[in-house]
Image (cartoon, rainbow, N blue to C red; front, side):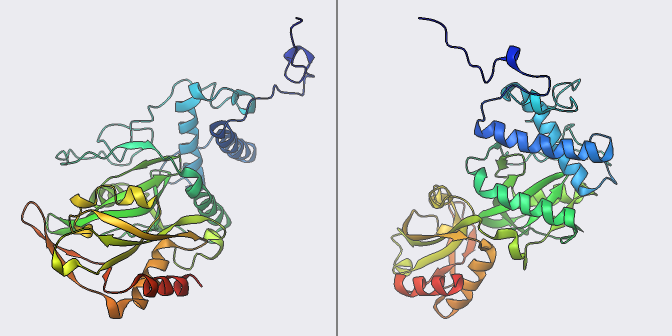
Length: 348
């Protein structure tokens, strides 16, 4: 049987202006969008983007994306034809993508003004891994980039003692989005929590709030990008879920109570280790109902729902396995129908 020839991709049949067509995997499609943004910057400025103190937020974010492409180029077959300025495949070296400034005290791919002081190792080391549902957050990052470039949203210096659900930050040239709070507690006498944070390069981490706050203060070029009254930033975007939970605790004071909250991730993942978290009373929980959020800030929706349910709120204190006492919020003495009515009103 004669060999089949792919006339569309045969390099011998291409004109000088044509490029071989690469198979567009989701990862490659995302990488093409990134390299095209970088190409546009180089065409405009005549230089590759650099992450350096004093550079614009846009340039530092592009420099971070360029470093990500360089470190991943072995898995990006087909991207070379889009690398117009030979920035990725002509680079002399690459950075280790696991060398994360949030997770270590060593050198990283970013320029740092001050040398970081040695610190004691934490009792839990956060891990950096690919974000499995990054497609839900990517439109939000794009909205932030666009608003920063257009000047409609101005990054402000970081001067906070804590971070809030839904906030965006620029840390060493990289956009960081706080999408979930877990296991709120006190650490060294100050409020702390386990976070889920998403990075604009498609990875995520579950570091402590205190760790993120410390890194933001250490980076003198770190910036906060607020989300209050964000307007079209969330338009059409899937921003998370509202959940109604019932505790499976056998304690009589918990009977009939419902927990109502929001998460930017998957509800099942959020409650996977409920028995180890004070917010769930150190007991398993059952999902009563979930509602997908589209075009709404999860933080603002949660605040609105809690205001509507305030007359039904029940304050709880729970003792953990180590004997410490915690406050647990978001629990209400209400029926599922009443909670559903409040949720529909908040989303109207």
